[in-house]
Every structure is written in structure tokens, then in C-alpha cells.
Length: 125
Image 1: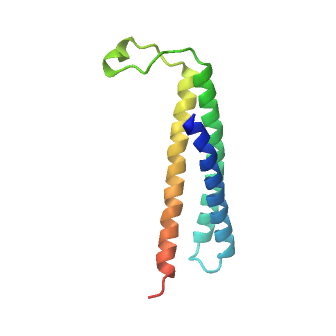
Image 2: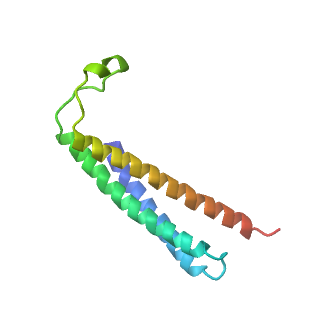
Image 3: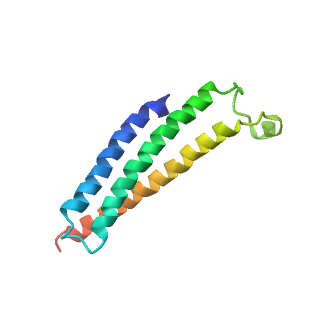
């Protein structure tokens, strides 16, 4: 439940970060190198889209796991051969949630990298 509760913090920060990228790209269109303004805005929009999908997938994954058949504890390596199969729907939703989380991480790191480069370029000297 900690993961689910923390998702509200993450979605709030993602909305703020995405909005800042969109606004910065619009406000500094003439000051930025050609094409960078559009990339920043598109990254902000992508962050908003991906975090919305991530939030929904997370709740669907939680619902799938919570309402699924009880499988007991997580099997150890030597028990995997006799462990019950994970239902296909549950596996697809949870895997999509993990994949989308990786995409979100890529977008945030990309935004951080651009911000770092722009900060260095803006320093005097």
C-alpha cells in the first residue's frame, strides 16, 4: 500500500515537471537553439501522458492482484517448477505497468539532462 500511496506524490511531481517543461519551452522559444523548444514541450506532454497511463495501470494492477486467486507467498527459485501460473490478464497489466514506469523514468532523465545542459550553458564564463 506504500507504493499506491506514494503514487499520489509521484503524479503530483510529474504534473508539475511536465507543466514546467511545456511552459519553459513556450516562454523561451526564441532564446533556445532551434528545435529544442518543441522537444521540451513534447517531453512535457509525454510526461503527462505517460504518468496518466502509469497511474491507471497501477490501480488496475493493484485491483487485479487484490481480486485474483490467492497464490500464497512468492515462490523461491527451487519452487518455481511447481508454482501456480499467474493469470494472463494480471501478468499483462502488471508487466505493462512496469514497462510504462521504465518509459516514465527515461522521459524524466531526458528532461533532467536537458535542464542540466541548459543550466551549464546559461552560466557566465
